[in-house]
Length: 545
Ligand code: NAP
Image (cartoon, rainbow, N blue to C red; front, top):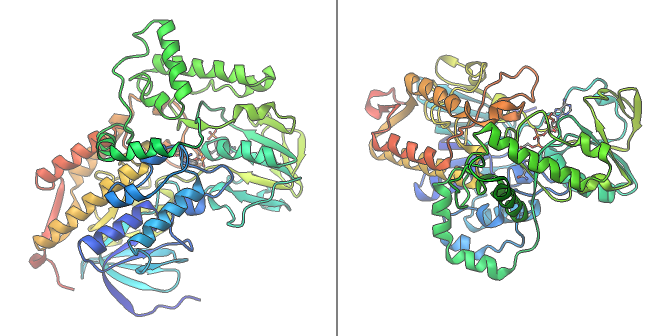
């Protein structure tokens, strides 16, 4: 039973030791000299890459872009091995960062923040953990990730299954042995699509339960010659600067051509070339309007459907795999390796749960439609309560004891995706309403961490006690975020961006769809205009602690 211990006074508490928490710790502690403590639920650093250890897990951002850019030496010394960074390699990288900057010495592991309450008497945050620790701090900062709260649907009888069951986002550290086993994977999002080919190659038999067929672009993953990466390193500053001012946080050249303005043969050639290149370039580097024009998106969708039909040998299976009910780019674009080829294997079966719904999970397996499927292992690749789920798990209360969860009941309300009215001196790194998941995350994270650092520096040097968003600014920001999403393909599908994967969750588009470059510029203007939309309370006007 946890007991309340002495209160520890600090400048800042940061939750999470992933990319966000690591860098925030470094900036506040080592650049500003603040007394900071980081609280992390895992036994080590890594965040997403600590938890998501499922087979095939890797990032869809190219490796040379999926890292910190704040330290030239760090950038030069780290060697990536492949086109895309695999989970063990990213975890090694983040451990290297933690070692290099000695970031663990002010961290608690295996500890969860249970509550964070703003005390209006002292203008301090009281942060309590499940270990009974109590911190009192000026700044309360969340680096809790956008996809950290795993969800396993409440299928009837779910907990009666007698075999092994795993969620991709909470994978056992010792791994799972699939050899000789009958395995089910439920879900065909990024996690399912990465793990399915690897599990199929190991297991005796794999059955995939699919709700929504997906569009995919081949990754073209593989080793990258060291000389290529060395050459990239000579241009790192330019590359990152381009990424910082791009849409998706990638340094890809932007094409100023519509898919509708070229003839069929030219379009086909461009799609083919982008398909050969693989990865997100297909989306960002082929045509300018795949994200915003339904007819353009449909042309890309048709191209991909043809590729699926060419790849999958059994026409009936291919038909079930064709995404027809949502346009390309309306859900997270998936990057795959051998996904569709996997359905040509004799030991793989696809169940369309729209035709054969999962009626029950029982002791031996899954009853889908009228058919019983027996399994040794069920893998839930069923996603996350994205963007707000991890906030809702913590009892966060601002002014007048208002709970963040209550304030966000109809959808997250933030100013810049960074702050929320009524929650002074609380900063959310890549919170809802910022580009976050629509971009290459390290680029978005660095921008937020640096903005928070500059803001804290400004407050300390100007003797300002509190920063708080203004209600009008927040209302306008939420409206702006909605308006940006409205003309995009994102509004044409049931996705986790809209909360549609969680029963009862309000249907609100949560990330900022204007691109990291535009967002960065907007933040710079806010600061240049004296932190427009924020109110500061000077130290001498506040009640002293
Ligand atoms: P996800 O994209 O939300 O996919 C979940 C899958 O489970 C979907 O196929 C979904 O079907 C299905 N599902 C959910 N609830 C279900 C239910 N009640 N019955 C049947 N099926 C159900 O989750 P994820 O694959 O874990 O990926 C989440 C995000 O994490 C990604 O979009 C990406 O941003 C990030 N991620 C990135 C990488 C990477 O960089 N490579 C890897 C993994 C994850 P519906 O489509 O019908 O909802």
